[in-house]
Length: 580
Image (tube, rainbow, N blue to C red; front, top):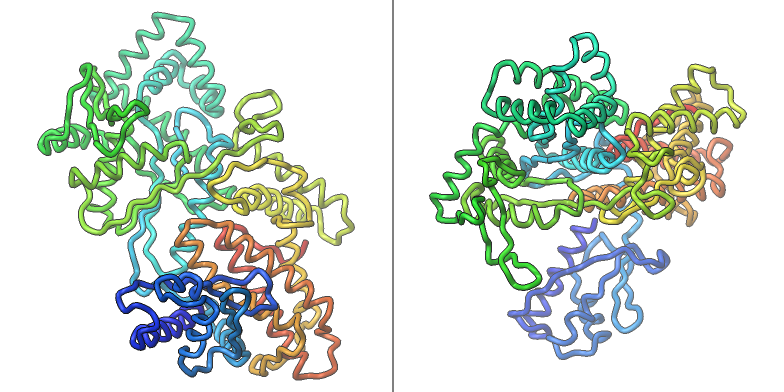
């Protein structure tokens, strides 16, 4: 409906340009918003205020001219002007009912797929395999996963890339520790990567002989030594297994097949350096090979270096990222490369994208975007830590989430069996952690608060999961009793109309999520939908409604609400429950 309305406005502006009311050479950006006061209509625009100056017209008079120029149509039931020149639009009920019916009759809820399907390569999660995944890895994994699900739902080909850190100096230390242990001890200690890493680090700090051996192993590993590669592969296999366990528990759609690790680009890195040299972009600075781009300067105006090769010949993240960008466009066919990485890496990616284009690692109209995110904070305003002050392992966090959710469920009266309660606790606990993150603006830090995320009140996973079961309970009570699914939809009550208007926004919201990579738009939408349904449910009798036509209509609205809640939560990576 938004696109149809934008087209009507474009035609109105075209007519006003032809009449000379608006300068013919003035470009017009039509912006439609949802009015804060829902009683003012379904959409609003400040178009008249923006055009008043170039048109040399009073904004309110120009608004009247725009309204008069809108072609005759069946989309709108009303247009009115508010304040100094805001134009409010109300969609006709016939259009609204047609949209609702189309959503009910469609497996994909009548969501518009992309007019032109793209291959979108999405880089997310990407942990360092030297340690177990911790709470700092949470945001990239679940935000990237939610956006990738939405992009797929909207008709794009999504290629997931898990750019894990599996190469570098710290691996020499880990291999030296593996070498020092017998096979049985190594297997036992590798079962807890965090303990293994700390023990290796302690040995590295305490023993110069061990440290020397670690440095030797790094060199041998990077030169392809068979013995070192055997130890390294054993370590990487265990590390990736730990990651996969966490992904499976989180419901994140990453598999071993999506792993394209740093080491995968190792053979390409000398070629990256030679390519940059051939383009005349390399400068040697204190023995290191650097690229200086005029676009990036320090506080004193000095050019900032992108170091691509260290003095000793080693490579850096920048080198690997350039190789990865080239691979993602030229081998994977990416039209749009999306990176979900900590906001603190914004300058790095900005430089790499600029250099990739300038050096020809990517070509054509490819879109390159870094979508940064804030930090998970504790109540003390500092990055979230475990009780002992250490970094919280993600597996431990999920264990605690399930334990707390089970305690919460056991405090409530329920007819669920012990096994069913355990399953519900798993879904509620992990979904609560995910939703608390996804419902916050991606670019902001947020406070990790167990009490808030596990409550059944407010914008939380338990509230939405319960809202879904509440809608579903209508159909459990209905049982095998048939109702007319082809019946007309009736929107006489203001609560019915409010629910209907919210339902048809689903398509619009999903496109906003994709365009901005902001899953919290979808969370906010689902929370509002659950609230609208609650108001409708309280005010509008459904199963005990004597008027059969009204009963059928309300059952259809309820069914569509359940479908949208289920699909919306699925796109966030949250499974629904039939009972709670």
